[in-house]
Image 1 (tube, rainbow, N blue to C red):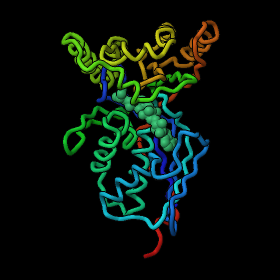
Image 2 (image 1 turned 30 degrees about the vertical axis):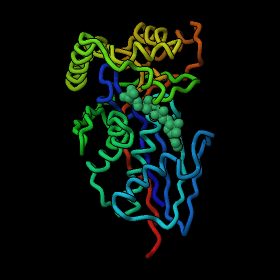
Image 3 (image 1 turned 180 degrees about the vertical axis):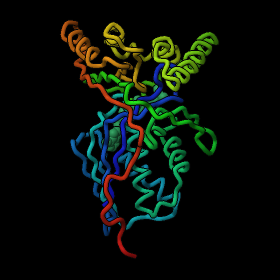
Image 4 (image 1 turned 120 degrees about the vertical axis):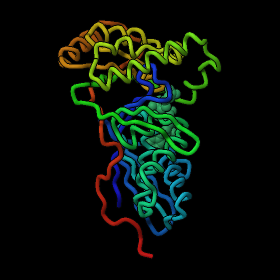
Length: 307
Ligand SMILES: Nc1ncnc2c1ncn2[C@@H]1O[C@H](COP(=O)(O)OP(=O)(O)OP(=O)(O)O)[C@@H](O)[C@H]1O
Ligand SMILES: N[C@@H](CCO)C(=O)O
């Protein structure tokens, strides 16, 4: 059996719609082994929305690899141990896709290169901003081209923390993409190009004082925040508590605030604020560091059946 550990991820990071994302230290484990016949999928904790047949996202990702390399297991057992909350904007689908591709490549003899796996994952997800950090870790700037992903990975220092607010409701990426406008105004495009560029420079040079300005967005948040009644309250309480910027995580509904040093004081301020204001949803709150490793092998016992 092969066990693969794959991180959660947060896409967009404010202005970088579909091109910036970071892996986070919150993980799913995907255990796979070849069996004599059939497909057996188990999951813990279980969730009715997790398919146990060929429609399972991990299986579908694995199958893209088997089709690509022309090797198929006789049968397959997949066990999923899920820590990443589903459909909350923390890259649960990208973890399934990148982790499934990574596991299938190991099971089928490691024929694909890292670049090929990154491309397959981005193509399947439709954009590379979750799948690439889930595959290789770090904070990634990435663009999906015709046959490859062009990307740069930045190793995030432990000093930068990601305060994650997760509500008790789901918002599917598909729905949150469908409500976006087909066209945007030229001035809004200019607004975002400036902020995304500033963000990349600020993050890589450690100039965190620029982050409150650099995390502003006009491409997706103004439309999506209407689906998240507490959005402004959470962003404002984070900034008042000392965050260096706060934004929607991926397609939402989770919200992330960036925190530099003094994160214990920030955490205390946020807990006090959460206890004292009225919110429409219940929000879980946790402080995470970036994961700089991406998908990794957790353990390998035997791989595939003898042929
Ligand atoms: N552990 C899992 N096992 C199987 N399928 C999963 C698992 N986690 C997520 N999925 C699938 O992915 C879907 C959620 O994907 P979606 O893109 O809507 O949200 P997300 O990836 O959590 O958020 P975002 O892309 O904004 O970060 C679920 O409905 C389910 O079909
Ligand atoms: N960039 C994507 C991330 C969600 O998967 C979006 O915002 O729709």
